[in-house]
Image (cartoon, rainbow, N blue to C red; front, top):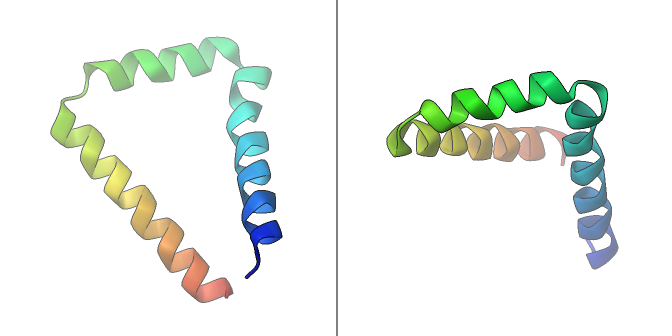
Length: 62
């Protein structure tokens, strides 16, 4: 993996992250309102799950 691949992955992540606010701003806002109601431990758990899923996906695809 070279530096260019890292920048391409970052660009793709930004495109994917921007889809929901573009398509459904009301749904995006509602999602964040629900996230704000969660405790720090719950948010950390979802972050850990996201990292684990990403690492597993990288291992499978690489």
